[in-house]
Image 1 (cartoon, rainbow, N blue to C red):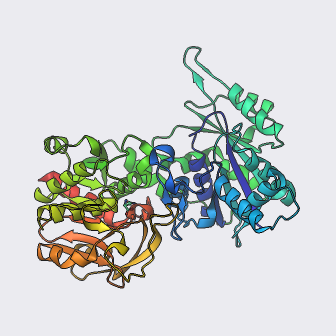
Image 2: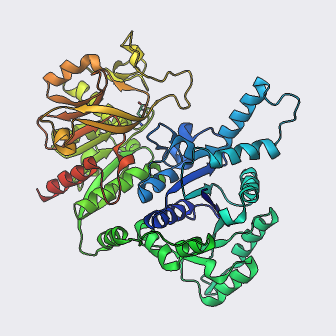
Image 3: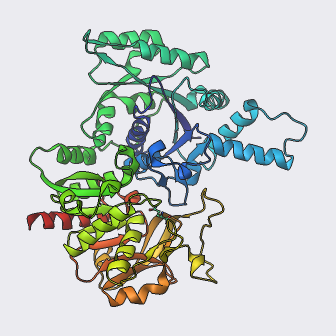
Length: 541
Ligand code: GLN
């Protein structure tokens, strides 16, 4: 039977529960154990799909088409285990299920309550879809003390009782602040946070203390004493130079050792940290070459809004032995008159996924600049759609070319399939219901011979993750082709353009999917690897 590890957080949010869970998962997996990671989010949205990235950062998409919390991206990048729909639950999803059942009369005669109905449903989620896993690591979103996370904490308390202490473990992550004025490390917030957890019946077995400075023995002893945790299970995590150093640092602190000791088991295999050491060395190296790449989007001010994309560029940099400097440019601020100035020191231009009208003209202007000046260009999803609009306006001379997503009166070079394909029976969302109705998850695309992408992927058929409602209007394809655009990736039925490129350009690729979601630190996604390479080449000119 699987062992369950619950990870909670205290004192403040954004302490790195996701990274800690992902690092622990890697350490256990690398020692021969089968691991699964899950996230429970206490908010009332059914999934983050309809939330602005300003609220919760990027929406991560799984192979099986779930729109999930960005922590699932960390999990995948650290463990290389593909997350599934069943790995992310929210309060909204739980309530939707329960109320659906109630309306059907499945609770006939009963009062439906948080305890036991909501907590039972959470417990079902925790163990659902688990096969032969040795460890299931469940991260609980939010901070202990929040009203919203209470049902989750109650559920994991009950769960641990149900399956027994020898099969469950609680890890609590807290902040140990350093007070500059008194030059002191403070343990009180950690004591209070653990006290809060104990008041609802959970005694953490391990406490991870996030701190700016190493925690001296005296303070560790204090935490151990007041939190009722053996000293060797007070694990510190001091800020690392790169997130990819985290598994090394947790190993040094003995996190995996303490977990295995708790469950009275031994490693099955010798741990290998080489890939993290190599990556950390490359990223932190002082004499690494640098390349400037611009990301032009609407949400650039929030660091987490393009999390997977930022990481994929880092991976692409590592593969090329360069440091990618991300120049984040707010598309809304770009005008035709200042594009050249803003992109002066940039070797490659990337336009990421996006929604809605704001900032589109700036993006289209930048694409025009990249196309005309032969600057490597990478358009992802919305970025590819904008490249189609730019080409239609400036090369095909369709002045009113646009997307029906933000202009109902345009000539739709981008639109909903039903707008030009009367008998189209391709899976498509409609505008009636916006939650979970986009083209989501893994879809195949066939690649054209002798194309740039074929050369990059070295495959005839690829599978990539999608998250979009609108498509390139395939009925105009021949017009585009006449002017030098190549539709080098198509859906197998030839109806949906998946990748475009340009004949007379060194590196211009747009893709309808999100390749960044499948990039890994030791295996950069080929499109990112090659985009960074092309940008690097451009910097030498
Ligand atoms: N807004 C566009 C669509 O829904 C693109 C989405 C995206 O970039 N992920 O089709």
